[in-house]
Amino acid sequence: MDERGTVTATVAEDGRVRRGDETRRAVLGRAVDLASVEGLDGVTIGRLAQELSISKSGLFAHFGSKEELQLATIRAARAIFAQAVVVPAMSAPAGMARVRALLEAWLGYSRGRQFPGGCFFSRATHEYAARPGPVRDALVEVDREWLDLVARTVEEARDLGEVGAGVDPRQVAYELDAYLDSANLRSLLGGDQAVYERARAAIEARLDSVAA
Image (cartoon, rainbow, N blue to C red; front, side):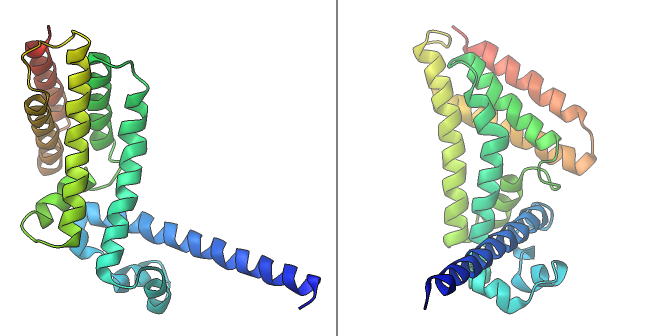
């Protein structure tokens, strides 16, 4: 093949890769929204192919199986969550300011419906909590990662003298996460946005109780 042919082939390959990436993003964008409302079991290659007017064979080429599609959906949701909650909060100074920023960002993420069904991970973990396998394992890892992050920010505040020396960061993280999950669930059940203010008040009371 001459130089012109090589260039043409390279351009064509780049175009296929770009179109493939665009298709994958479109599929996962729809998948995370769908899963947040109907659960990960509602995410199927057949349904997404129909909704996005893409051939099933094309989607199989990207994901290979329903399970791999679900795992890719979890990874996509994790990236969206990180950008919406973790990244902004990490810009706050270490200590109680960062703890509050992290929790406030989570409330905003749920209340603002980053996913139409509220928190993607609250929906998915309730669905798969008692179903062993790779999908559950991926959700367990995300849950552990989140609780570890909250506990670590509380621990940083303790190390800075802003939290009492005898406070257990992991216990505090567990309780704070319960407030978040409760607000998310009840906002969906009753449509009452006041639950976020109740969660915020509960969070403040708990943080005040552990302050040095």
